[in-house]
Amino acid sequence: MSMTPQEVIKNLGDLPPLPKVATRAIQISVDSDTSSEELQRLIRTDQALSAQLLKVSNSAMFGRMREVATLPEAIMTLGFSTSRSVVIASSVKNLFSRGPAGNQERILWEHALATAILGSAFSRAMHYAFTEETFMAGLMHDIGKIVLTLKFPEAYDTLLRHVHEQGGEGPSLELETFGFDHAMVGEALLGSWNLTEGIEAAARWHHDPIQAPKETQRLVALVALGNQVAIDLQIGVGSPEALVGATWEAMDILKLDDATYQRHRATALEALERDKSLITGF
Ligand SMILES: [Fe+2]
Ligand SMILES: [Fe+2]
Image (cartoon, rainbow, N blue to C red; front, side, top):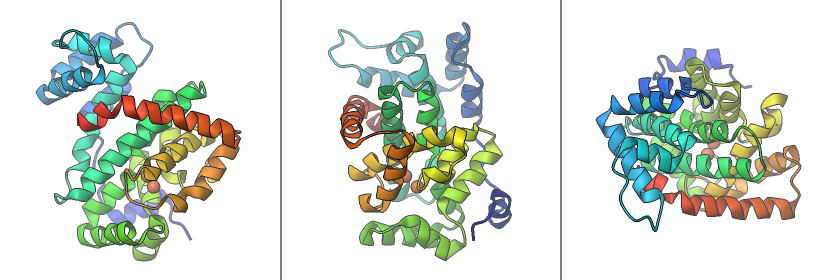
């Protein structure tokens, strides 16, 4: 039996709000002429964020002659979409460091970013129009784990450690322990944040993409692939074998044969290598 998001919320009590900066960055649309200026204005309101963007843009490109010193330059270097993603990621990151200090949050955060980068690279390689949404969905797909960390610090820490040491599958253990898993919690949280249906579906169904509502399936599948590759690389907690079912479903949804999957996977790995600074820069 699986709980509805409403039941999950009832069980969990208050959920953390979406950070203000992220909310505003999400509202700034990709395709209006004034977007870039709006984004700059938003970044300027936050010292740490400005510094972050300069840092990321300086580590993003090699072989450049001189340092990126200004915000407009930084946005130009990274491109509008990436800059916006950095802003959102950077403000969402605070959620990942609110729990009791520990290694787990760092691991979860690196996993989230890697999944975002890999998933959106798959999306780009396959010429889908929702690459940026895939990035955000990847970033948020396991956010239910953060909520579980906040709500049940000790029990969840023990559980994660167990999965870390023994391998196996997190979600079934979570269901046993709490009556819901991180996917259901993620759906409840993102629903309360009012993000897109695709982002919500990716949180709920990344372990079982075929169950996602039809119109969101490809996005969910891309996140599932990003998730698989991140875990293959041991960026995150879990064993690659536990995700094989999800990956088969994702390949089926995206109509990928094995050779094509491997080709896109190689492209995604290159993207991760190139964007590693996004991870180390945070
Ligand atoms: Fe997950
Ligand atoms: Fe994951």
